[in-house]
Image 1 (cartoon, rainbow, N blue to C red):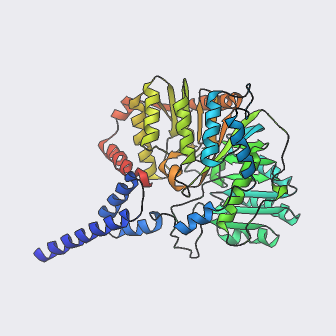
Image 2: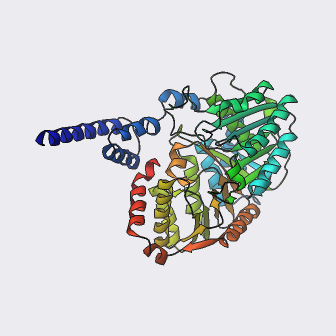
Image 3: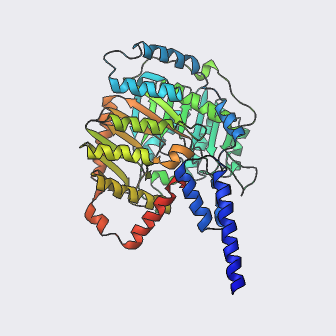
Length: 482
């Protein structure tokens, strides 16, 4: 018995020693360091396997390869806009206020994101409507279709979109597809075989040479963008799959938010796509081509910036945008996110706003698609209720929208959730919109969604079982690595 206890003690000490070496050999923030240490110590062996697949940071070589992809077609515009902003010439007095100028400056400096004027936007909240429009736009393409989705399922909707892409490729239109290797793991590359025979190209992002082993599992391209002829663009939360049409019983109706854009903001999406393409492929990289960036006359009245962030940068550009919006709010903050796991900076900013009397509203789903993630979400939802915010639980299916609206004036729609993963681990892209009309539209959509929610109250929180509270507390400890 003494020998067994001695062996157990020795193995435990060795495991702790190896866990400390493993975690501290790579520079990361303190919260993630302690979360991984907890996993490695409590799950000997299994924890190390998990770390190998989802804990290792991107290699310096791969980060260099991604970051050396210049903002294709944007560099000259960025320099010009910085000069104009410094001289107060970027926005007319009618268009500008201090908040807009500060937001524009933030993204020009942190992400080299150009401010585009006069865009026309259409908001989609229903998958069927969104994909009917997308497929119609693809069918009208004359020069190119560039499409990037985290999830591209091999199902009925996936085949509909693929058929439209194949038809355009057969007509001589350039068709490029990027799909995330993890998000589309149920889709085999042979699904795109006929598209490639017809002249199109499809590439997995951060794929693996082996079917089972992928040591870059934790770093995913979560973006969802489409560019058609450099004139029409799509950005938002919908992926390609039948569940996004509400056809999967587990989720029910799928409530998301997506934008269709006409105007020069599409050029920023084009630049983002080409950079991601160059990061995904070994050969056949793309340089600037004039036909990819056709300048257009104003289609509408919306000013906006397309902002990207990812693990290739320490700046967390989209998170900084969220923080800036929250800090500028004077009257209201409306947030929708399926995963609400804010880091300390975002949690403090929202808490301060709520305690300052600002109308803070947060909407989350009523069901999980990832158990630990959802329990962490409900933990932080409870923290927000205690801080004085209104938290709404969406009951009409699954809420997947990633939106923020402040004071009914400035809005954000995109792919980034309010969680650690979107801030640090995923490649994300958001549209930051400076148009009170669009912001009011999004605010009204939010208020209509409230009709299909129930309010999370302190009384409901008190009624939770001890087991539920334990699951939420434990999931919170893992939140930096979820």
